[in-house]
Image 1 (cartoon, rainbow, N blue to C red):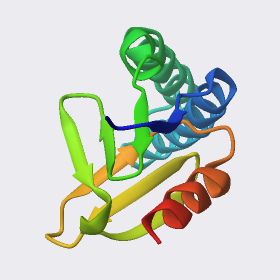
Image 2 (cartoon, rainbow, N blue to C red):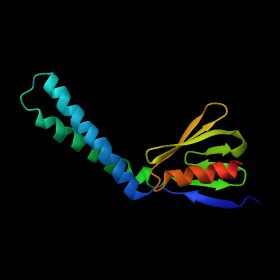
Image 3 (cartoon, rainbow, N blue to C red):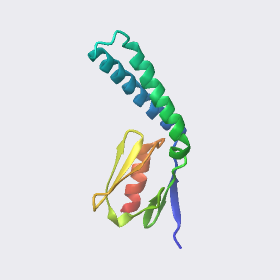
Image 4 (tube, rainbow, N blue to C red):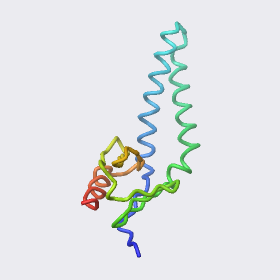
Amino acid sequence: MTTVLTTFTPDRSAYIRSHAWIAALAMGAGMVILWAMGNPHVWTGAIGGLAAIILRGWYLASEDLTAVWTLTQTHLTGPAERNIALAQIARVRTMGSYVQVVTKSGDKHLIKYQADPADTCRTIESTCG
């Protein structure tokens, strides 16, 4: 029998914070694109970028905020039937509110929207040995 050591669940605040950063980038990019095209209504790029990211965040929240990863003594399992043997993990690193797990075969998996991604990373690394 395999004992669950911990689970990694998405944090709503990290989700909102990540989308706020994406929205800021989309707003800036929209304005720059309209300015480069010579559009006199550059400000509409900000509105469009914000609206796009709000819609994306709302639409994907039900999926992104229910993705749970489980750590046991031997495996890290996640959504979409992901099952990673701890012995196959080559690297674990943080990327914003995400934790990226890279296997020895080169497969990459993201544990998204962690409240403390550094702690998630340390927990996985310490279990791997």
